[in-house]
Amino acid sequence: MSTPDKFSVPQTAVTEPIQPKPPHPTTPHTHGDGDGDSVHSYVCKFKAESGQWECVEYYKRQILQDVIDSAENNVDGRAAIDQLKDFGVTVYLADHDSVDIGVLRKVVEHVSKNCNDRSKHHLDNQRCLLYRDEKGRLYNLLLKNESAGLASTWKSLLLSFSGLQAMIAITALARVFSCVNPDENSSVKPGYLSIVLGLILYEEISYVGLNCSMYIRGTPSIAAHTLISNFDSDWPRKIVLIGMALAAVQIQGSNLQHYGTVGSILLSILVIAANLGSRAWKFMKWKPVDNGGLIAPLVSIFVAATTGFIFPYMGFGKIQAGGKAAVQLVIYNSIIVAFMFVISDFDAVQNFLVVGSETCNQDMTNIVLGSWFTFTVI
Image 1 (tube, rainbow, N blue to C red):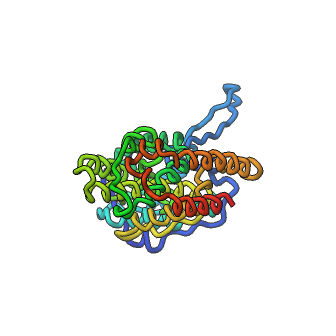
Image 2: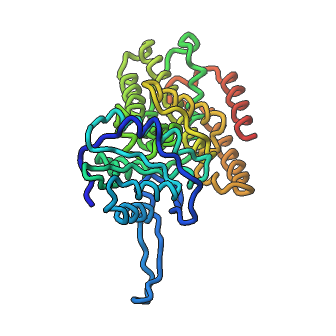
Image 3: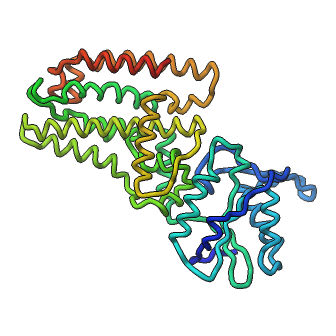
């Protein structure tokens, strides 16, 4: 069946969604976490006729389509909806008689808050969005929004993200705190820091808004994010790099150059910590925060950054192993971070990253960072 281009969701589909019953033994299972439709799941059945195994990819979608097809002759699709309820699936119904993109956004917000809770078993998070035409026929609606490219890039960055590099970057960049007051030194300006952030730490400062949307606010898919978000571009990363570029071309020794450099570095620390925190939020399977309101993106970034500062090692990819392996991971990486923290105190290293920072008094910075480092390890 083809999916209609225009559709709407009645208000009742948002305020009074069909609640799932206890999962049926035949409820489709989800293998691993992922971005909705892109999860690669298979069900294989042995065919006596051919003597071979036949595997069906995206079997959840196939089961849903089979349910719809089996009840195709039903007048209003009630039989299909009832069967989905028996499967433990929350059904959102879009009727043909009106089009309201605002209500569809409310559906996404409702799913993010109530049906995408990682603290629950995955069978409690089953949901689907159905379109019912004027003849009562049902269609399974999938949000695409031409977001395949963004989803592919995001997933690639998730794989190449390095928690160790993020921790080293935070400890090294935090030394700029000792240079906040320009009276204590001539001034500071970016050395090769913009190159380091733009190339070496590209994964660690990229797509913080998208990470917070998916992990902190519980947005069900990349397509859903593009539907509810006003900004699809990676503006936080661009602002960091533009800020450093502008600071570098200011008058040598001016306050504008000094504060532009310090502000850009502080923003880069916030972005890196938020990326660590959003991953930690996912790995610890905490409930999503409210996905509604204009300030929801800013709130989610603040929550993610706070989590990243308190539980940075929980944002490491291999921490999911748990147990002894996780403890060894934290100890091993903390030793490396401590070593790099000492190296970052060398004048040559500081002058390479932030020119002028080597003249700042680092005593208080060393005490604060040392205390924070010990706290995060414990």
